[in-house]
Length: 454
Ligand SMILES: [Zn+2]
Image (tube, rainbow, N blue to C red):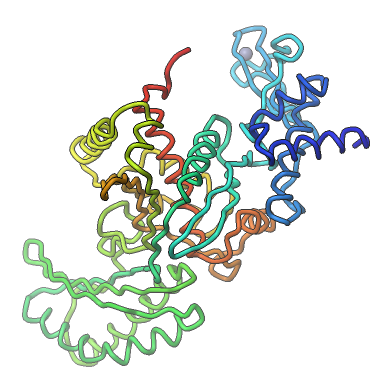
């Protein structure tokens, strides 16, 4: 890069840091004030934001790559007129509908599009900067949010939400000490009497069995079995026994090792029941009962975390340009929509988009994060203040690159940039960005500005 351009990048980064320019306006600034010609401005804008993030965090980008041409180009099929937005490095410029060679679409600067708002790098994922958020309470930090949100305006809403929440002192975090995991065994019997005999035998060997399971499988992860549940059910002459093992961990997920420990327990229980002549028809690792990885209140996988912001009612009314009653009506409309119409107890609307953006960016375990997206939104009045909060009931995460699941260097770099050092901080960051998104989207909805056509 020429010395001129380096100075330019430094200057734009400083202007963003000083608050003179919003990070997503860097492209426009380079075109209008610095005389850069499209599409060269995309690369310089990305470099400016990367510089900003390096300055904010004190880390340097080593792994999060940046393509030479970080922008989309528009193409058109001459035969069927379909329009294609292809990344500039994509050489496969053929229409997949009809096989025709695509023609450039749009004139001059019109032909080019940004990869994602606030793009900062990435080849297979489009990483965006989504502002900083201050958290306090169980975790005290300022997170620098980098999300793999993809194209769209998502990061803008989160950035704006973070900005507002920081103005009111940040987000207060409450996070559980332990994360849970669960795995269930089931036995099938011909009679209730036989089932009761089995319950007695299992309860007798359980204290020693628990110790052995922990020693063999859970000690490496500082995990423990904290509860074993016995449940009896039946179906037309078959008598079932569920024996569900619940484990908990401070720093890791422990899901895989919980499963292995319970598999071991099954072998030991089978052997003992056979020795004692207790007859069962079938013994199973029956995953339906444990609630593991099911988006339901019974899910036992993951950790509880909540984030809330507190601000004067008058400040909220001023900001939302309506009365506080509108906020409560909005929350009720949404609550009924989910509770009555969908039959679920959660709001997974925005959380279901924001939380995966964090998982995609950090590539931690688990890669499928469906139960972690279970979210409640709440609003309360305390004295003269309104409290706006989100709670994630089952945030499941392991941030160590270990035999539980290795994490690639790019993702580990992203974790450092964000400022996440352990699973509790991950949970705090997830709750804080979700709060920022929900807070901002709620404001836009009650102002009538969301999806308002221009
Ligand atoms: Zn075509």
